[in-house]
Amino acid sequence: MTNWLINSWRKTSVADVAPEPETARAGASFAARLTFDAVRKQYGDRAALAGLSLDIAPGEIVCLLGPSGCGKTTLLRIAAGIERPTGGRVLISDREVASDMQFVPPEKRGVGLMFQDFALFPHLTILDNVAFGLKALPREDARREALRMLSRVGLTHYRDQYPHILSGGQQQRVALARAIVPRPAVMLMDEPFSGLDVQLRDSMQEETLRLMRETRATSMIVTHHPEEAMRLGDRIAVMRDGVLVQTGSARDLYQRPVDLFVARLFSEINEVPVRVAGGRVDSPFGSLPAPGLADGSEAILCIRQRGVGLEAHVNGAKGQPGLRGVVRSAKFLGDAVRYEVAAEGFDRPLNVRAAPGAGQEPGQEVRLVIDPDQVLVFPPKDVKTT
Ligand code: ATP
Image 1 (cartoon, rainbow, N blue to C red):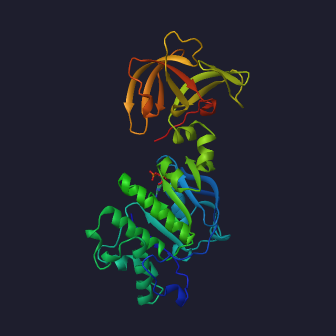
Image 2 (image 1 turned 180 degrees about the vertical axis):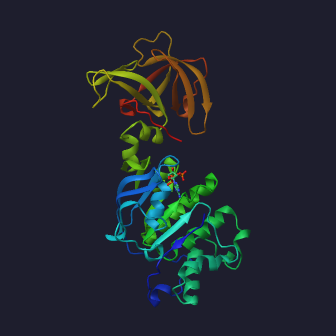
Image 3 (image 1 turned 135 degrees about the vertical axis):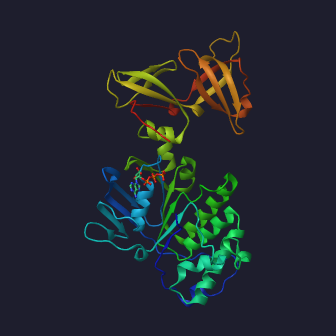
């Protein structure tokens, strides 16, 4: 894959490109709205996108999240103009850039693209890599602007070196600088952090967010990782089989997932088959609401692993709340311990994530209490995640 730069450079004033200190700002971009209106993309008899509508506000960062093959990259490529939609429309700031009647080529869309493998040009110096997207500027101006952005990502001293001497994280920084230096109105990123180790990913995410906020680029970021989406996105758009399943803030999606598929993406859950009666389901924890589900229908009771409280069982104590259980295993995970607990009334052990302080041991008797807000009930759809 190539790391694309598809930008039309906006003319800047002399003041814009005047020398600035090392901490110079990345520059302020105009804010664009990115709109997908019932976009379809057909590959043979397979619908990669099946009528998807999404509106991304100027300056907003939206993360596209979903399993492999659900159409995330296709949507990104259609926004960039690398692919043509089979149907529907794409608009940038209310200007139609793709439809039955219209097709604006990539270089005229004011869009920056960044893929996961960075793909720097090996025969160009780091500085020339960054300056690559500034061809419309006089060479000296382009170099000055590129230097400014290199300084912004902390790599000024590598400017005359070639990409092969850089570490993965440094290459990623150069790729980011290269994509963002032309100040695209819209930034499209396809899994930009997936090649980085955890620590590096963390700092690059922060840096990228800062730059995007400064440039006010309207951004669409493809990711496989719910946590990354929660961290980066003002909004998350969850896709499955070429359609949007749910869009909303991280909090919305976590607290009010529309179905089992979205619930599974955002938290570790115990799934217990139950039957609905009178708008409620019976469980060993008592009767719980099952709004909107038909009487007599099967359902899945989802109990968040973090929604179960674990307390030591006190022998002989009267009225101790909660279900009785026995710890089967305890796995220390640093910031939490994952317990497997055989609980009365459940056919299978429950998984519980608790703070490490609890310190329960295998074989120990415990009491389990649930927070009703951490319990959800859904129809048992055939849902798959990867
Ligand atoms: P991943 O997360 O694995 O990158 P994705 O969600 O980005 O997946 P896409 O790459 O958009 O998914 O692909 C969506 C569907 O369209 C897949 O079934 C894929 O095989 C198919 N597809 C994508 N590009 C083409 C193509 N050029 N020709 C035929 N089928 C394609």
